[in-house]
Image 1 (cartoon, helix red, strand yellow):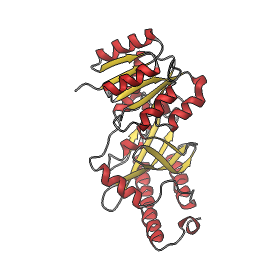
Image 2 (image 1 turned 180 degrees about the vertical axis):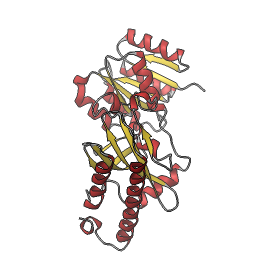
Image 3 (image 1 turned 180 degrees about the horizontal axis):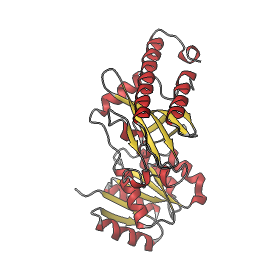
Image 4 (image 1 turned 45 degrees about the vertical axis):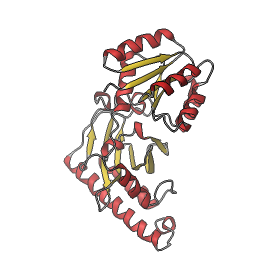
Length: 293
């Protein structure tokens, strides 16, 4: 069945060209030119993806985002399309659950890549059990811990990359426990390379994200921080549930040696051992932040 897409923008010419192109790619597309009509369209159509301009007549895009988030029957992934001059609005849209972002002006190819990037985010078959396992470690939204930070730093040194993270894939976000060369605390799951990495048992390597259709339309690739290279070794519980990854990134295409891949796997093993130790300490009532500082 064709993916349903709602395009909401005041620019009728852009809507028409985008609709024609996406329908030619096999999507089912409907359009609206203001926020009120857009909300009605979404309620009637129940699309999988919404491409939303923020500056809309009658109902602002941010207000529309907020209503969608509160609507129990609407699960659309929202791609916000806006001028870079509306950076504050984009930040608010991210807080309201926007899945991805697209800078205007954009071409039909840019739009198609952004949609493909959002569409391609995989969900493990055991997602409910996986999330329950992740929550059992009480790691999300905790303070920095030197033991984790040191392992992230070591990953960057071994892989010779400017960026390295220890990440956990939550139900709707990627949360960073430790990071080197990256400033965000979390990103939407739909933008996450690690959401793909947890589907693997070995190290996942993306040598050039601009040439990979899963990531070419990702705003982390097309704009700052302009990720090109990614490698992530998944974190697995003793029962095999995927929690997140130890990963490294760079702003230029590159490859990895077999030695570096092996080292990244070994570091992931150490992170998992640290998680197990941390959980056992929590059960005993010991403050792990102090114990690992």
